[in-house]
Figure 1 (cartoon, rainbow, N blue to C red):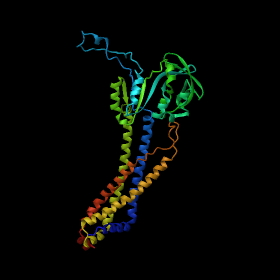
Figure 2: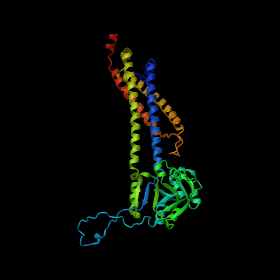
Figure 3: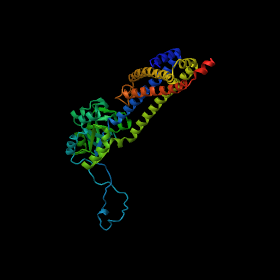
Figure 4: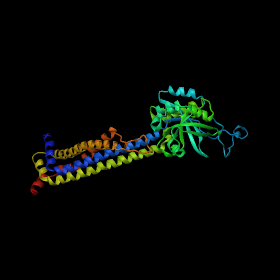
Length: 419
C-alpha cells in the first residue's frame, strides 16, 4: 500500500474528531508547559540556594585544625611499648594555628593548572564593645581583590564598598544583623577587643549581608593587615588558604593531595556541604517526578480519545482494510495521529513553557535576607526542553500504540456484516 496515503488518512480522522483532538493536544501542551516551567523554576531556586553557599565557600580550605596530641609521654616509654594505653581527657597540643611557610605554598598553588585562584584569610575571635556589653564576633581578615574575584564579595556588601577595606586603614565591614544590634552606621567608630584583651578602634565602612541571619550577627570583614594588627601578629600570619578550582568535582582528590604535600589539614567543598547538596538533589528529583507524572496523565488522555475514535470509526477501519490496507497500515495511521498530537501539543508546550518561565523570571522578588536577588530565579537550561520533547513523543507513542494495535486486529467482514 502506498504509505503516502497514511498521513492524509490520519489528518482526515483528526479533522473528523477535531474537538477531541484539540482537547488531547491542550492536555499535552499544559503538561509540557508545566514540566518546563516547574523544572526551570525549581532548578533556578536550587541554583540560587547553591550560590548563597557555594559562592562563599572555597572548593578546598587549607588550615591547621585544633586536635589532641597524637603522641603522649607514655608513648616515649619503651617499657610500655606493647601495652594498650588508656588515656582520658587528652588536651589539644600546642600547635600553630597559622599555616607554616604560607608564602611558598601560595606560590606553589598559583602554578597549579587545576587552581583558579587562592585567597588568604585570617579568622580572629573578638568582642564588639557596645557600651558596657560585649558581643561575640569573628573578624575575617581577607585580601579584598582575591575575595572579590573568587567569592563575589562585593555582591553581598549592601552598603558601602568592599574596596574601602583596602583603601582605608583600620576599617571594618560589619554584618548587617550585628550592625543593627550595635546601632552602627557607615562612618562610625566602633571598639573591638581581641582575645588578648586589647582594644582597637575600627571605622565602619560598610555592611555585609550573606542571607543567613545567624552568620550576619557574628561575622565581619577587615583587611589582612588590620586583622594581623588586632591579633598582634606579623604580616606572614595566615590561618586559612581558600582555593577555587576550575573543576569543583576534583576537590576531594586535590584536597587529599594538598594535605600530604603541605602537611596541613584540608577540607573539600563536598565534605563541608554534603547535607546541602543532598537537599538540592532531593528537590530536583521531586521536580522531575511531578513533571513526568503530568506527561503520563496527558498520555492517558490521548489513549482514551484514540480508543473512543476507534470505536466510532470501526466502519472506516473496516473499509480501509477491505480496500487493501493491512493491519500494520491501520496501526501506522493511529500511531501517526498520536504522534501528531504529541508533536504539535509538545511544540506549543515548549513555547508556552518558555514564555511562562520568562514571566516568572521578571516577577520582582525583593527580600532583605537576599540582597543579591531581585527577581524569582529561573534556569533556562536546554536540557529541560529536550527532556520534555522526548517524554512527550514517548508517552504519546505509547498512548497511541495500544489503541492502534487493537484497530489493526479489526475484522472487516464482521464489522460490515454487523452494519
